Length: 155
Image (cartoon, rainbow, N blue to C red; front, side, top):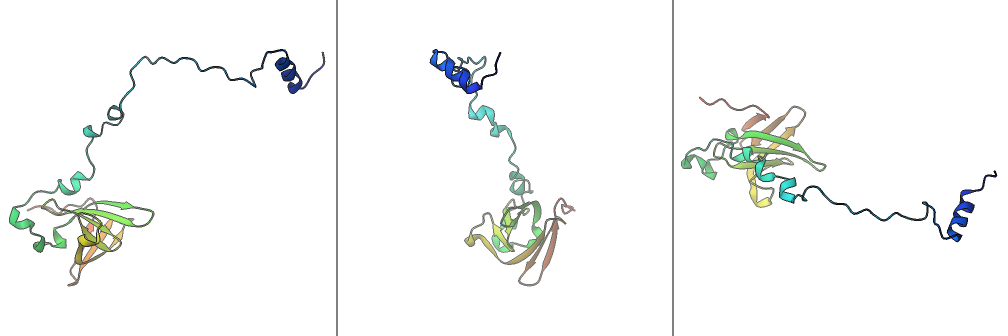
């Protein structure tokens, strides 16, 4: 029995009307699912999950309405809630005792969102993720060092 190259055998099969498995695809079998297809809401049940950023604002204790005036803002009332690193810059999420949220990014403190109109005037800072610290400084040289995971004890 002599060995023939595969292409010769395939050519003979094709000429004879039979095509080998290399040249033809088997038809896809009919697939019947035993369960119904799931919806996106069933696959990703977000309504049952806790929003990790809610604690940044809603987790703070609500103070009286008179203590929540924007003009009474102080860096000493802030609590560091989270620190994140992005390809472009570092971010920190903060909250005050009134439930207001703040974002620190690129040396500036923002009230609520990263828009120029939301910059807290006169507050600069420095963040060191390795030490989990954020140092804020006002234009009056008032300094507050915040550490991630440390809460001020309430008296």
